[in-house]
Image 1 (cartoon, protein in one colour):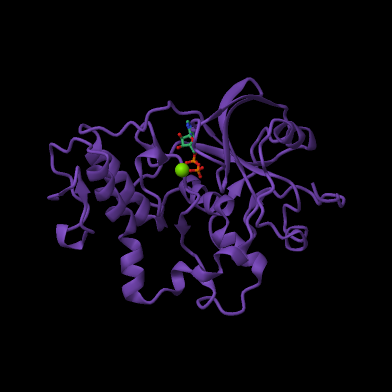
Image 2 (cartoon, rainbow, N blue to C red; image 1 turned 180 degrees about the horizontal axis):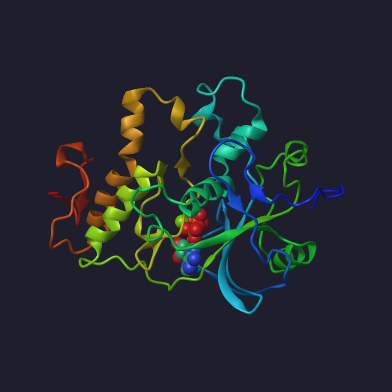
Length: 282
Ligand SMILES: Nc1ncnc2c1ncn2[C@@H]1O[C@H](COP(=O)(O)OP(=O)(O)O)[C@@H](O)[C@H]1O
Ligand SMILES: [Mg+2]
């Protein structure tokens, strides 16, 4: 662990830039009881973004997603030519999986102004927290690698979090994705509502659903967004359709029964898919 500087106060909301923000979790300073790691099986390897745990805080069980730090230089290929002279720390607020989740959940938790409701889109989120030294030590002692090799210490120490590990508190869902032939239309409508609220999840797949709702916004783009909003119109249309394309692919790849023939995009728009070596008819 890098040498400690006195930690600045914990912000009340994040990220400190334009657009939606996520609140600090109400019980952020309560003790965390670590129960087990979830969403993981033997042989999956070390995750890039972080770990999810079943925890108990203030007598209530939650899912706690603990994030590794992000080095914006690693994703420069995706933003380098688009955003001009934006400081690297600001780039992080739009590319780091932790901040992607803060922004998306910030939007989901915003009061709605007459638009379709968003509460059913995602497993509810309660806010972010920074791990205490004790919890950080506990995870390190139990073999969780929180210091990804891409981290740049001189960059990281000047961030708003410094070297404090960030985590997001969510309702604990079941272990089932919960997408069936019966609720496929409903799940699709939720994705459309999410896109109408200018969140593009960019990672629609079965593993990122629990109980028919999205649990993972680590790859999402939520407008206003310095990269998404700088796309030229044809690229922006393509980007906006991304979730619907992934939805159709998920239905095919996971062989989800589709008795009502829910289809998000016109078949001509979709990439060719093969199941059991045979081309799929959408
Ligand atoms: N709130 C939750 N309730 C139950 N299981 C969850 C929850 N959040 C995540 N998981 C499980 O943990 C896995 C990894 O979480 P996810 O947020 O998708 O992280 P990653 O960025 O590593 O893909 C999910 O695929 C799911 O199985
Ligand atoms: Mg995931």
